[in-house]
Length: 196
Image (cartoon, rainbow, N blue to C red; front, side, top):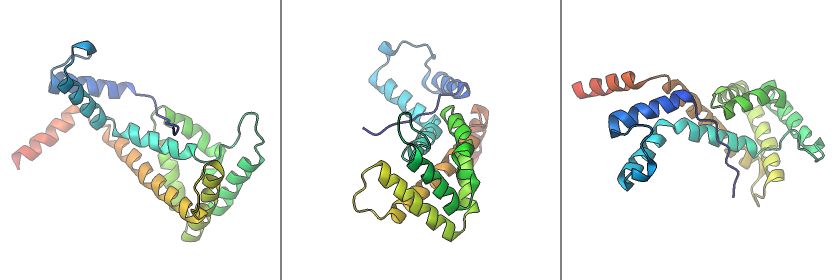
C-alpha cells in the first residue's frame, strides 16, 4: 500500500465545517454519529471533501516528495541520497531544491501550510528548459532508485513527476488563498449569481 502523508487539520477549517454543518445540514458539530442516516453521512462527507480540497492536494504534494530519495535515512548509507540532492541542485540551477531549504517547508506542509508549494513553483520558474530537462533526468533516476518503474526512461518519468508537482503546487496555493474567504464571502457570491 502506498504511503499517504496528510497535513494536520487546521482550526479555521473545523470552524468552516461547523458553520456549514449548522447552516446547510442543520446538524450541530457534536451530533452523535450513531444517529446519522446514510444520507446525512453522505452529505457530511461531500461537504468535508468540498471544504478541504487543499488537504488532498497538500497530501499529494507530500506523497510526491516522499517518492524521492530522503536526504538521510537512519541506519542506511546516505551517500547516494546526498548525491541525488547535490545532482538535482546542479541540474536545476536553483538552491531552492536543496534539502536544507526544503526541510522546514516540508514540516510546515505537514501542518497544512502552503510554503512547500510556493517553493516548488518558484524553483520551477527559475529553471530554463535545459535545466528542467536535466532536473527531470535526475528526478527520474531518483524515482527509479526508490521504486520499481520498469521500462520508463528516467527523463520522461522525471518530467511527469515535475508536471504533477507543478500542477499540485498551484492547486495548493490556489486553495490556500481561497480558504481566506469565509461563509459571508460565499453567500455574497451566491447572491451575485442569483441576481444574474
